[in-house]
Image 1 (cartoon, rainbow, N blue to C red):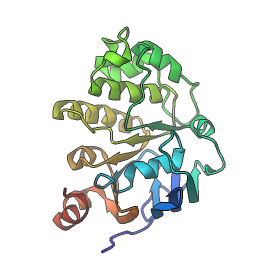
Image 2: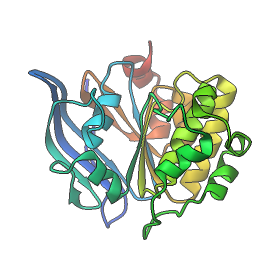
Image 3: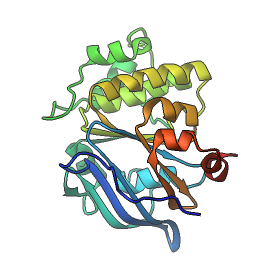
Length: 253
């Protein structure tokens, strides 16, 4: 059963900030993504939903191609701000303004919170929110009190906030967030959702890989559902959250 509606309603007339079309991804000879299509509009929050192993993280890694667990080969069209991403190495993709927060956070454990932020600092860019350390501490108040703590001593929720803040201080135009609520206590997930809502208010474009429906519903304008490497639904977040049939088919454990 397919509910996919392609890229309709994908953003303003100027076109999406991020467009993925006919994306196939492979680990060696094994194909794991099949014709994935999605778009992220400017100033929009989009959720990529699905069960564990459905292909959410693989989709994000196929876009930025960071780390040893990224697919060995990708085919299709990947465009950010109109630029073709496929021939670019990960550091060039980051310099274009596409930020990425991986599921495993990857903070520098031996550095302090303040030092982690300095590592990520990049000049402000036109058309993107300009982040300073002070603005980030206003967004994530807990980090302000932890500036001198080594990142390796932080809780999972604190490390998640630091990982997001370190990416933001690079002043990206769009942010890919991989399973941000994974492993967080409900109260910490609520705080993180509130902080990410602040980013949405700043006009930052966010593509959110998530399986927590309540977390995604609090933030996202639209949703895609992926199952076994294929997009099965594309539409409004409210339509997904309100459909018992869709939730049972693609999100229920």
